[in-house]
Image (cartoon, rainbow, N blue to C red; front, side):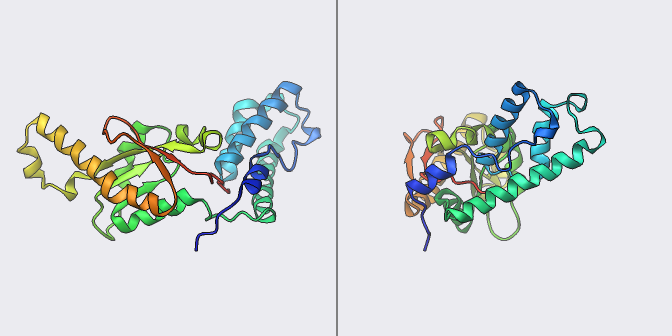
Length: 236
């Protein structure tokens, strides 16, 4: 049974908390400290799970010459980033959150059984995601289509409790290359949009409903469906 997290847990989880705090001996000025605290907190909220992701934030805000870390700059930053990740995971356990009690994550996992590739926080934007999602398929089954939300969508998920999804079909599950090439451009566009909408209606939305997710969508291919989840509790 899917264990759900309650509003109190989510309130605790979303309350800004940087543990451990930025070390005083780094000699950060107030502006750099504030910028770092805000960006690192965003990374934790999004569930970034590798020290390298956090190190990039430091590299952006703090050029080497502006820190007091000297030659130990990257080593100490990396160690601190791992401490942030470990502390965030420990805090999740302390307040009773589990890595898999995000209902959207569970729904995305279940979509694989329907032949739908589903990815969370996938690539930087919709264009990159739509291009790269084809490489996410394996040989375990026939994959009919995909859904994903990208990093830009994830940035607002913890505030709105929702994400908008990109979706589409893998044409080779429906047509041979010869069959597809025999269609004129207008028919190709109509077929792609029609199949994509059908995939969403018949394979994706029923799974979302089973997992208690509400979807705001007018049924048009040109409009991205908005999926609401009370549990964007991304744990690193």
